[in-house]
Amino acid sequence: MNLVERLVDDLDPDLSVRARALRMRLRHDLALRLIGAMLAPGEVAVDVGANRGVYTHAMSARVGRAGRVHSIEPFPGNNWRLQRLARRRRNITVHPLAVSKRAGTAILRLPRYHGHRIDAPAGLEPATASQQDTFRVPVSTLDDLLADERRVSFIKCDVERHGQQVFCGASKILRRSRPVVLTELEQRHRPDDVAAMFGFFAAARYRGWCVGPGGLRPLSDFDPARDPMRRLDQQFVPCGRPAGDVCDFLFCPPGIGPPGG
Image 1 (cartoon, rainbow, N blue to C red):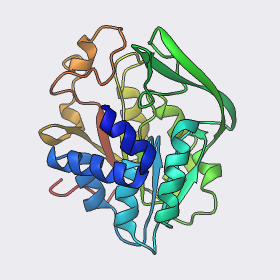
Image 2 (tube, rainbow, N blue to C red):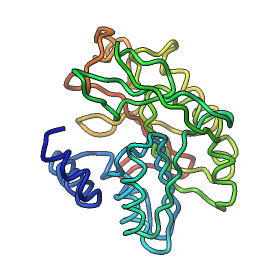
Image 3 (tube, rainbow, N blue to C red):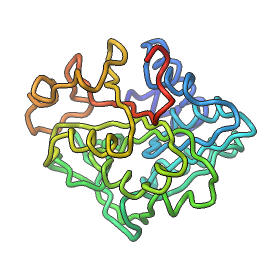
Image 4 (cartoon, one colour):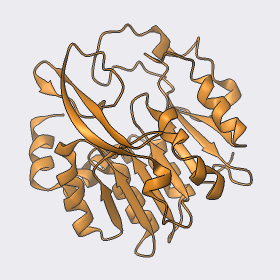
Protein backbone atom coordinates (compact mmCIF):
# COMPACT_ATOMS: atom_id res chain seq x y z
CA MET A 1 0.00 0.00 0.00
CA ASN A 2 1.47 3.38 -0.99
CA LEU A 3 1.26 6.66 0.90
CA VAL A 4 -1.65 8.00 -1.18
CA GLU A 5 -3.71 4.85 -0.49
CA ARG A 6 -3.00 5.17 3.24
CA LEU A 7 -4.17 8.78 3.25
CA VAL A 8 -7.35 7.97 1.33
CA ASP A 9 -8.01 5.02 3.65
CA ASP A 10 -7.91 7.34 6.65
CA LEU A 11 -9.77 10.30 5.13
CA ASP A 12 -12.55 8.62 3.15
CA PRO A 13 -13.05 4.83 3.44
CA ASP A 14 -15.89 4.94 0.89
CA LEU A 15 -13.64 6.56 -1.73
CA SER A 16 -10.90 4.11 -0.81
CA VAL A 17 -12.97 1.01 -1.55
CA ARG A 18 -14.30 2.54 -4.77
CA ALA A 19 -10.74 3.18 -5.95
CA ARG A 20 -9.63 -0.31 -4.99
CA ALA A 21 -12.63 -1.87 -6.71
CA LEU A 22 -11.94 0.13 -9.89
CA ARG A 23 -8.35 -1.07 -9.91
CA MET A 24 -9.51 -4.66 -9.43
CA ARG A 25 -12.02 -4.35 -12.27
CA LEU A 26 -9.32 -2.99 -14.57
CA ARG A 27 -7.34 -6.10 -13.69
CA HIS A 28 -10.43 -8.22 -14.53
CA ASP A 29 -10.80 -9.51 -10.97
CA LEU A 30 -12.89 -12.66 -11.25
CA ALA A 31 -14.22 -12.52 -7.70
CA LEU A 32 -15.91 -9.17 -8.33
CA ARG A 33 -17.40 -10.52 -11.56
CA LEU A 34 -18.75 -13.57 -9.73
CA ILE A 35 -20.39 -11.34 -7.12
CA GLY A 36 -22.08 -9.41 -9.91
CA ALA A 37 -23.21 -12.56 -11.69
CA MET A 38 -24.28 -14.75 -8.78
CA LEU A 39 -25.81 -12.27 -6.34
CA ALA A 40 -29.18 -10.66 -7.06
CA PRO A 41 -30.99 -7.57 -5.78
CA GLY A 42 -32.79 -8.20 -2.51
CA GLU A 43 -30.59 -11.09 -1.40
CA VAL A 44 -28.46 -11.50 1.73
CA ALA A 45 -24.66 -11.73 1.40
CA VAL A 46 -21.91 -12.30 3.95
CA ASP A 47 -18.35 -10.98 3.77
CA VAL A 48 -16.21 -12.98 6.23
CA GLY A 49 -12.85 -11.29 6.65
CA ALA A 50 -14.04 -8.01 5.16
CA ASN A 51 -10.77 -6.12 5.78
CA ARG A 52 -11.34 -2.60 4.35
CA GLY A 53 -14.60 -3.53 2.65
CA VAL A 54 -14.03 -3.77 -1.11
CA TYR A 55 -16.18 -6.88 -1.45
CA THR A 56 -18.63 -5.59 1.16
CA HIS A 57 -19.10 -2.49 -1.02
CA ALA A 58 -19.56 -4.57 -4.18
CA MET A 59 -22.12 -6.79 -2.47
CA SER A 60 -23.96 -3.77 -1.09
CA ALA A 61 -24.24 -2.21 -4.53
CA ARG A 62 -25.47 -5.49 -5.98
CA VAL A 63 -28.17 -6.41 -3.43
CA GLY A 64 -29.53 -2.87 -3.26
CA ARG A 65 -31.82 -1.35 -0.65
CA ALA A 66 -33.96 -4.46 -0.33
CA GLY A 67 -30.94 -6.66 0.40
CA ARG A 68 -28.52 -7.00 3.29
CA VAL A 69 -24.76 -7.43 3.63
CA HIS A 70 -23.19 -8.75 6.82
CA SER A 71 -19.60 -7.49 6.97
CA ILE A 72 -17.50 -9.48 9.45
CA GLU A 73 -14.06 -8.18 10.46
CA PRO A 74 -12.22 -8.79 13.77
CA PHE A 75 -9.37 -6.28 13.40
CA PRO A 76 -10.27 -3.12 15.36
CA GLY A 77 -8.20 -0.97 13.00
CA ASN A 78 -10.56 -1.71 10.12
CA ASN A 79 -13.88 -1.64 11.94
CA TRP A 80 -14.20 2.14 12.01
CA ARG A 81 -13.69 2.15 8.22
CA LEU A 82 -16.45 -0.41 7.75
CA GLN A 83 -18.74 1.51 10.13
CA ARG A 84 -18.28 4.69 8.08
CA LEU A 85 -19.03 2.70 4.94
CA ALA A 86 -22.18 1.33 6.58
CA ARG A 87 -23.38 4.82 7.49
CA ARG A 88 -23.36 5.73 3.81
CA ARG A 89 -24.78 2.40 2.64
CA ARG A 90 -27.59 1.46 5.01
CA ASN A 91 -27.88 -2.13 3.82
CA ILE A 92 -24.54 -3.04 5.49
CA THR A 93 -24.35 -4.45 9.01
CA VAL A 94 -20.85 -4.55 10.51
CA HIS A 95 -19.89 -7.29 12.97
CA PRO A 96 -16.61 -6.48 14.80
CA LEU A 97 -15.66 -10.07 15.60
CA ALA A 98 -14.23 -13.29 14.20
CA VAL A 99 -16.20 -16.39 13.25
CA SER A 100 -15.16 -19.98 13.85
CA LYS A 101 -16.62 -23.38 14.76
CA ARG A 102 -17.49 -22.30 18.31
CA ALA A 103 -18.15 -19.04 20.16
CA GLY A 104 -15.83 -17.47 22.72
CA THR A 105 -12.70 -15.37 22.37
CA ALA A 106 -9.47 -15.88 20.42
CA ILE A 107 -6.15 -14.23 19.61
CA LEU A 108 -6.01 -12.37 16.31
CA ARG A 109 -2.46 -12.17 14.94
CA LEU A 110 -1.30 -9.37 12.62
CA PRO A 111 2.14 -9.73 11.06
CA ARG A 112 4.58 -6.84 10.83
CA TYR A 113 6.83 -6.50 7.81
CA HIS A 114 9.72 -4.01 7.83
CA GLY A 115 8.06 -2.28 10.76
CA HIS A 116 4.64 -1.91 9.10
CA ARG A 117 1.52 -3.67 10.35
CA ILE A 118 0.01 -5.79 7.54
CA ASP A 119 -3.67 -6.36 8.22
CA ALA A 120 -4.68 -8.30 5.10
CA PRO A 121 -3.18 -11.63 6.29
CA ALA A 122 -4.38 -11.23 9.89
CA GLY A 123 -5.87 -14.42 11.27
CA LEU A 124 -6.58 -16.69 14.20
CA GLU A 125 -4.04 -19.30 13.13
CA PRO A 126 -0.35 -19.04 14.13
CA ALA A 127 1.43 -16.54 11.87
CA THR A 128 4.72 -17.21 10.09
CA ALA A 129 5.98 -13.64 10.42
CA SER A 130 8.77 -13.17 12.96
CA GLN A 131 7.11 -9.98 14.23
CA GLN A 132 3.41 -9.71 14.94
CA ASP A 133 0.84 -7.81 16.97
CA THR A 134 -1.89 -9.67 18.83
CA PHE A 135 -5.43 -8.74 19.82
CA ARG A 136 -7.98 -10.68 21.84
CA VAL A 137 -11.23 -10.63 19.88
CA PRO A 138 -14.76 -11.99 20.38
CA VAL A 139 -15.71 -15.05 18.33
CA SER A 140 -19.10 -16.28 17.15
CA THR A 141 -20.31 -18.91 14.72
CA LEU A 142 -22.05 -17.93 11.52
CA ASP A 143 -25.00 -20.08 12.58
CA ASP A 144 -25.43 -18.05 15.78
CA LEU A 145 -24.61 -14.68 14.26
CA LEU A 146 -27.08 -15.02 11.39
CA ALA A 147 -29.74 -17.06 13.17
CA ASP A 148 -32.40 -14.45 12.34
CA GLU A 149 -31.69 -14.43 8.59
CA ARG A 150 -34.25 -16.58 6.78
CA ARG A 151 -31.97 -17.16 3.79
CA VAL A 152 -28.32 -16.39 3.05
CA SER A 153 -27.52 -16.40 -0.67
CA PHE A 154 -23.78 -15.76 -0.91
CA ILE A 155 -20.77 -16.13 1.41
CA LYS A 156 -17.33 -14.77 0.62
CA CYS A 157 -14.69 -16.00 3.07
CA ASP A 158 -11.04 -14.92 3.35
CA VAL A 159 -9.71 -15.81 6.79
CA GLU A 160 -6.13 -16.98 6.27
CA ARG A 161 -6.28 -20.75 6.77
CA HIS A 162 -9.20 -20.69 9.21
CA GLY A 163 -11.87 -21.43 6.60
CA GLN A 164 -12.66 -24.99 7.65
CA GLN A 165 -13.49 -23.82 11.18
CA VAL A 166 -15.68 -21.03 9.77
CA PHE A 167 -17.76 -23.43 7.70
CA CYS A 168 -17.99 -26.01 10.48
CA GLY A 169 -19.69 -23.21 12.42
CA ALA A 170 -22.04 -22.56 9.49
CA SER A 171 -23.45 -26.07 9.05
CA LYS A 172 -27.06 -24.95 9.65
CA ILE A 173 -26.76 -22.14 7.09
CA LEU A 174 -25.26 -24.49 4.52
CA ARG A 175 -28.10 -26.98 5.00
CA ARG A 176 -30.92 -24.44 5.25
CA SER A 177 -29.95 -21.68 2.84
CA ARG A 178 -27.62 -23.49 0.40
CA PRO A 179 -25.61 -20.31 -0.29
CA VAL A 180 -23.01 -19.93 -3.01
CA VAL A 181 -19.56 -19.88 -1.37
CA LEU A 182 -16.46 -18.06 -2.63
CA THR A 183 -13.51 -18.83 -0.37
CA GLU A 184 -9.76 -18.63 -0.18
CA LEU A 185 -8.00 -21.91 0.64
CA GLU A 186 -4.23 -21.62 0.86
CA GLN A 187 -2.24 -24.82 0.63
CA ARG A 188 0.81 -23.06 2.03
CA HIS A 189 1.28 -23.62 5.77
CA ARG A 190 -1.80 -25.88 6.04
CA PRO A 191 -1.31 -28.94 8.26
CA ASP A 192 -3.56 -30.91 5.90
CA ASP A 193 -4.28 -30.90 2.19
CA VAL A 194 -6.85 -28.46 0.78
CA ALA A 195 -8.61 -31.58 -0.50
CA ALA A 196 -10.04 -31.90 3.02
CA MET A 197 -12.17 -28.84 2.32
CA PHE A 198 -13.11 -30.19 -1.10
CA GLY A 199 -14.42 -33.27 0.69
CA PHE A 200 -16.31 -31.12 3.19
CA PHE A 201 -18.25 -29.37 0.44
CA ALA A 202 -18.70 -32.54 -1.59
CA ALA A 203 -20.33 -34.15 1.45
CA ALA A 204 -22.71 -31.19 1.52
CA ARG A 205 -23.49 -31.88 -2.18
CA TYR A 206 -21.71 -28.80 -3.47
CA ARG A 207 -19.84 -28.62 -6.77
CA GLY A 208 -16.53 -26.77 -6.89
CA TRP A 209 -14.42 -24.73 -9.28
CA CYS A 210 -10.91 -23.29 -9.10
CA VAL A 211 -10.83 -19.50 -9.46
CA GLY A 212 -7.64 -18.61 -11.30
CA PRO A 213 -6.15 -15.92 -13.54
CA GLY A 214 -7.46 -17.71 -16.62
CA GLY A 215 -11.00 -18.05 -15.29
CA LEU A 216 -12.89 -20.94 -13.71
CA ARG A 217 -11.72 -24.52 -13.97
CA PRO A 218 -13.37 -27.70 -12.66
CA LEU A 219 -12.20 -28.68 -9.20
CA SER A 220 -11.01 -31.97 -10.64
CA ASP A 221 -8.30 -30.04 -12.53
CA PHE A 222 -6.72 -28.76 -9.33
CA ASP A 223 -3.43 -30.45 -8.43
CA PRO A 224 -1.91 -29.26 -5.12
CA ALA A 225 1.43 -30.83 -6.04
CA ARG A 226 1.53 -28.59 -9.11
CA ASP A 227 0.24 -25.50 -7.27
CA PRO A 228 2.95 -22.81 -7.06
CA MET A 229 2.00 -22.14 -3.44
CA ARG A 230 3.50 -25.50 -2.56
CA ARG A 231 6.88 -24.31 -3.78
CA LEU A 232 7.05 -21.11 -1.73
CA ASP A 233 9.27 -21.21 1.33
CA GLN A 234 8.08 -20.45 4.84
CA GLN A 235 9.36 -16.86 4.89
CA PHE A 236 6.60 -14.30 5.33
CA VAL A 237 6.26 -11.94 2.38
CA PRO A 238 3.11 -9.81 1.92
CA CYS A 239 1.22 -10.81 -1.22
CA GLY A 240 4.04 -13.23 -1.97
CA ARG A 241 2.20 -15.36 -4.50
CA PRO A 242 3.68 -16.46 -7.81
CA ALA A 243 1.94 -15.85 -11.11
CA GLY A 244 -0.63 -18.50 -11.87
CA ASP A 245 -1.31 -19.36 -8.25
CA VAL A 246 -4.73 -20.83 -7.46
CA CYS A 247 -6.00 -20.35 -3.91
CA ASP A 248 -9.61 -19.15 -4.44
CA PHE A 249 -12.46 -21.59 -4.94
CA LEU A 250 -16.15 -21.36 -5.80
CA PHE A 251 -18.64 -23.87 -4.38
CA CYS A 252 -22.25 -24.04 -5.57
CA PRO A 253 -25.22 -26.12 -4.38
CA PRO A 254 -27.24 -28.31 -6.76
CA GLY A 255 -29.07 -26.38 -9.43
CA ILE A 256 -26.75 -23.37 -9.27
CA GLY A 257 -23.56 -22.79 -11.22
CA PRO A 258 -21.33 -19.98 -12.43
CA PRO A 259 -21.95 -18.31 -15.80
CA GLY A 260 -20.97 -20.83 -18.44
CA GLY A 261 -20.25 -23.46 -15.76
